[in-house]
Length: 136
Image (cartoon, rainbow, N blue to C red; front, side):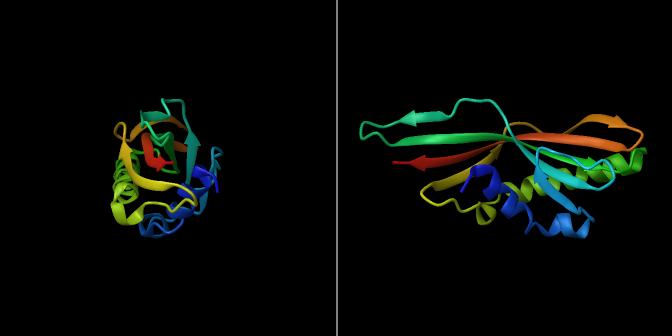
């Protein structure tokens, strides 16, 4: 299983997304006509620490991207609140994805989720994360 796939699978069980009407959860692409959330792998250092026995503490950096249909101030504030809530849900230890052959340790936030763009169809928010895991 791929890391992005595992993260997406966990996101599909996030109650905040269901409650807020997010109908599209996927990889990289955003649907301009739907509330959607996406995972995009990003650049970053993969090895955190190497051990003498060849095992490693590793990380998988990724971005969480949310597209909201609302462009007024209240709508953007609500979207910001939602994406922050989803981020907090995602980093909670009980919500870590299970990935075969890897010992997932945690997901950490690299920054806050912020508005990165808007157009007549909606606003896009993004936050950066790292999934940390141990491999032998």
